[in-house]
Image 1 (tube, rainbow, N blue to C red):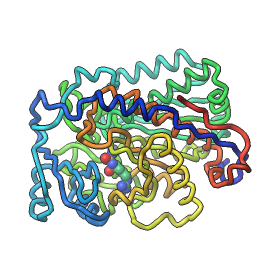
Image 2: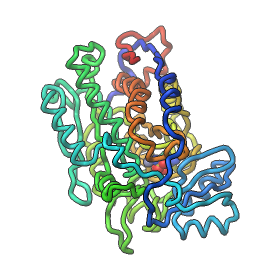
Image 3: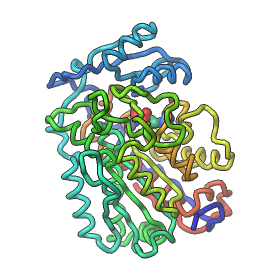
Image 4: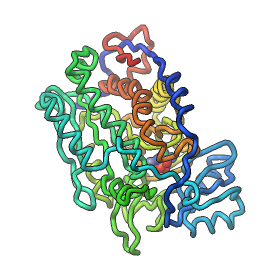
Length: 430
Ligand code: 0X9
Ligand code: ZN
């Protein structure tokens, strides 16, 4: 059964709570930029590069560097020495400095983040305490043989495929550790509230199936933290033909694969791999999604920049189906009311072919979003803003997540006038 346009009508209530205030207070307490304790032996450079339009940004992405944040008139990129030379030649570099001067390093202060063993323990613990609704299984193995763990939340696993489903994905990119914590905390929140008797959450768990895959790239995560100081690793850990390591899993999906904003050079951080779904991690996600016809909605968590992105990202053209376009826009704008992020079509950022959401929308028509979680910029810590961001990011993204779960039975309901909707309301979180 495919859940489509004709679902039950619905009433939705929005509340922003007071987390924004708390967020600002917390932000004032966080030092804007911690200096390094450790030198990096990697040839990465932070660079401020002139770029006024999305076309300028795509041209920069096409050199193989990763655009980390987009600003008015420029972008900040992370470039290897070779890529730096190319950008230097283009005459568009304004500032550049080697990573080792500037990057922060505080793994000892970051023990609240979960490594692979810790997240596995946390998930097993969650299952043991909630075996009636939390069902844990592996959807495949990583390059190095780690299980890719899926947390399925439903009170009625026998009817899994008869209930509308939503999937949350975390950590395609190794260094984006907050994108592990957000989906893990969501799973814990749902189970806790169910146990406490929260009627709204019980209703969601009884009427939908929620899949949470918090760590798509466990090998990359383990590599990033393997020395006790962060390595700024992004890709998976496949050994490439030229002896380098890693494919960018968010360039490896098979819709529009190989296009702009992805690289054929294995050394690049946006290396797309030798062919679509060449990697076991993306193949596992693909097989999982293809075997769940009940899915209607997908959210892939990344960091950083505070954005809500929707398809397509491989072309500047709008998605052809006007209704689908409207649903993505309305949902993105609504979710932005809670987290304060900027909603936009992915390609507004820069073109990038082969990402998760282009594939999940392009081939399955799942309503699909990428969140670029906090912080807003590298000046607030970039990929490594410190563990104080964990509860903060969770609080502001909880309502957006619940909103997506609520509408997973029929996302098209968001297009109905409010007065025609009856039924569940999005649970309010203060
Ligand atoms: O480039 C990416 O894969 C994502 N940004 S990140 O900094 N987390 O690496 C954004 C993907 C958005 N999709 C497109 N722009 N196509
Ligand atoms: Zn990412």
